Length: 279
Image 1: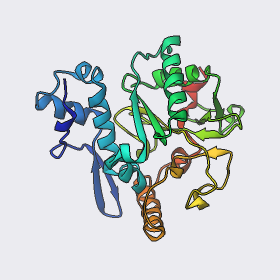
Image 2: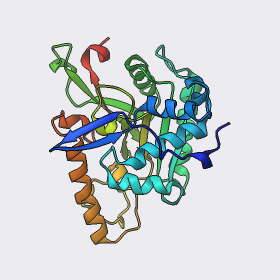
Image 3: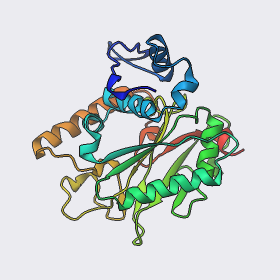
């Protein structure tokens, strides 16, 4: 069993290169982590990794900390997730043929528990077995069966006319009896995602606390009926916060330059190729 205290990825090879304005940045992909762990004898193959939740979480947190999302706030949260109330839960047992009722019940139970836990501000559901577009679509269809979960499309299906069109999926979770909706952010190892969302494992990041009237920096979200990851409280002063916000916009703009900007919007959980979503 992998000991998370050994989570030293300093010598991790990074095979994803982003070039912008003559500068290069490199980030790791899923296979880089697998190769790294095999070379150091922590696992024998990918299946070994899948069956170790602590290892999955260590990898995903490390990836968030590298800054590929462009979000400077996420880098701070990833350094001390317990302090900021960021919980991760690994969900196994999914497949491209659908998600069983027992897995759906597990997801519903975990998210409901996080909503009512005062120590948790956001929860990430990590699905290490969801590695293909078909499995992702199946997962999304299945989640829509849950009573407090819903899916809408930013770009109406009636407008999709070609196989290379994109359907922008918005996954939402109701947080309370007032109907406050949490905007779910999606990450994963899929070529059609924005680079800022291209993570080692499929992840659904969910803000589980609604708007609070005394919450600072409300210029990020002044709608009391929506909950955003950007609302997670971070204990920094106003000047530091402002600089983090500026740096986030600069970094995310650099990383996703020359790509479809809608794919990285907070209101979009996943951009799915229309040919896959319509099947």
